[in-house]
Length: 381
Image 1 (cartoon, one colour):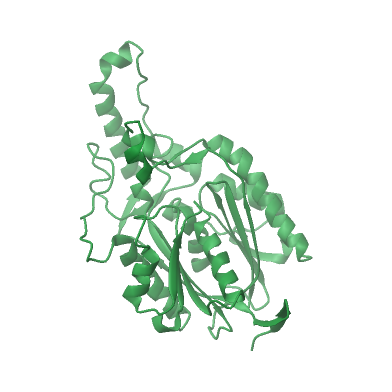
Image 2 (cartoon, helix red, strand yellow):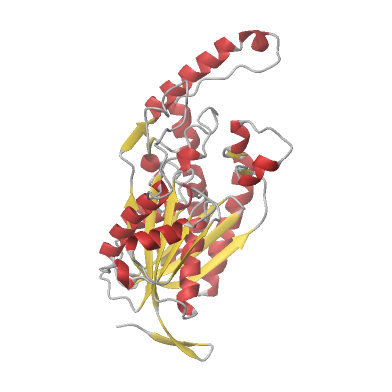
């Protein structure tokens, strides 16, 4: 059964998240492994640049530690697409085989894997889908769209497109799917987020070498769902405001600019302290505004599936909403195992911890570069 509502003179069936999937890479790196590799790199760098360090031209690099990582972030491990080259102090980044244009791209391959799991959970076939949205912080290429490649691989009729909104890409993608279905353009949509973050992280930077992990998530959005475990989308709320405090400058325009870029200048960089100070009040206030609009209080929300970037960020948000007295399962954490997986983090948390009773409500909320924030209010149906 589903509720029929009347919006702008048109009858519209309720829209649901009906299935989720998570593809996890086969390689896992502990903090200790990552720190050992990084510290070897530091020793090599300091030895090779001893003269400049001794004369004050450049600063010596400092060692990292597992204790520092856990205290700063709550991260204990991460999954990556390739391990040996990333841990090689002479390389410090993954190495994967290049693929020909007539081969399935890496991002499309992992997207298909996550999508098939989400479809199985929704009790649907690929041919039931009529739209694919691939939404991630970074895309493998400009065009053809990864989403269209995935559409072709799965044999889906309809349309597909890519989009990027930093660490809010997955939730903005769900919002677009919700809007497309509500507008009558589609009925069943796959939103996929292939977050291969090890390709844009700087593993030679002490403040950031531990932050990211690789993953791919997929979500099925559909109207009139018959899935056993589904969540009605009650509302979506979005906010963006421009900031330079989280950047990735890699792009095709680099090749025609009058500057020779170093690799580090084209990789992820952030001012973590300023991000925390500026973004976190935005997040809590946006969620509170959304709840007020629906005559709900923070206590009415059974579960908060928050962006998984930093344990201290999540603690700030949940304490602003619920105070100091709340059980840990109200805002489940996956970043200790997965690290920051960019836009996929909140979806992983939802995928793993969505066991609610009918009528109970939850919020998926992401926040990150842009700045961008999206909160999705759900009800277990």
